[in-house]
Amino acid sequence: TPAGLVDVSVQVENGVAKSVTFENIPSFLYESEVTVSVPGLGKIKMDIAYGGNFYALVDASSIGLELLPENADKIVSLGKLIRKAVNSLLDVRHPEKTFIKGLTHVEFYGPPTHPEAHVKNAVVIPPGSIDRSPCGTGTSAKLATLYAKGEVKKGERFVHESLIGTIFRARVVEESQVGGIPAVIPEVCGSAYVTGFHNFVLDPEDPLKEGYLLGVKKDE
Image (cartoon, rainbow, N blue to C red; front, side, top):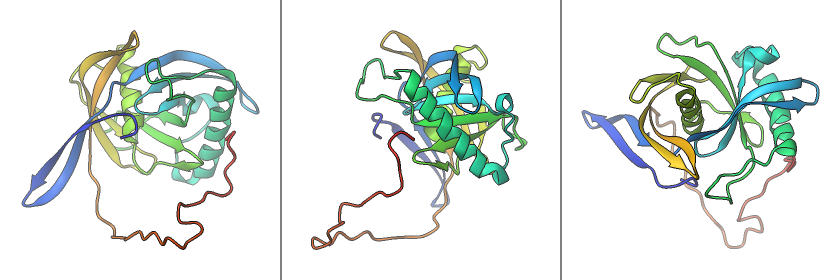
């Protein structure tokens, strides 16, 4: 992955892949309960954590937000506001890999609705959408935060629910350290399903063969 090498294992039953588990890179709580002034929202308390990307972890109830699919547009809008505010006020930077900098993701969290889950989330990813899963790096960031605060123990199962009810199962497998910051190695397990196949073709005569991106502002 862009964050580093990860180990992956696949559970196979009767020739069918049922779940995939990966051991992620060292993840850590970067800033605990930092307060950021967000235009239109006021002062918001959040944790900033790293799990492969930098996340602002925000209690949805603290800004009157309900984590419901019908609130998707509002969730994205608020997430973009928070991300912009954090990046304008704080220098978020990996302590060892200094090329990894800036807050990219906002993770709202609240009480679960899935019977197995401990926490429900909605992860706003750039440029402005919501992850259909609880997010692997987001789950790692959340798990690192909970561990740093003594809310989960090493080896204890943590079940993370997405906005649409999908779940990841995770646990801390070992402690680590990143640039003097206490960190953990998270293990995350989930399932995916084949929905189709596609072949991408690069035509050397295509003037846009390397792709293009429209409608995205850098400050968002």
